[in-house]
Image (cartoon, rainbow, N blue to C red; front, side, top):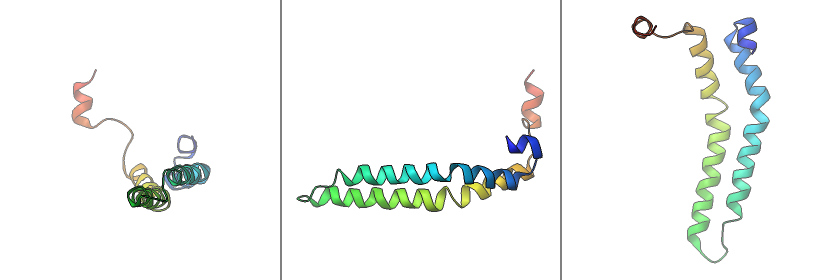
Length: 93
């Protein structure tokens, strides 16, 4: 919504990330808590899979969704015009 009002990609991405940050963190914590319940004290295989899920959830929440996705989104919104490519625009009615 802010992008439509202001046209400023950077502040729009920062505002969106600030609003959705708690949801991303909560989803990661839910995944970690759910995978912890699967781990068995007797078998090593579920513990290994649990550790993999925990690491993947942390990497996804902290690195992927917090740094490159907003940066890429901000850059793409600044550098591109809104609309279809010209070749597709000629074909579509």
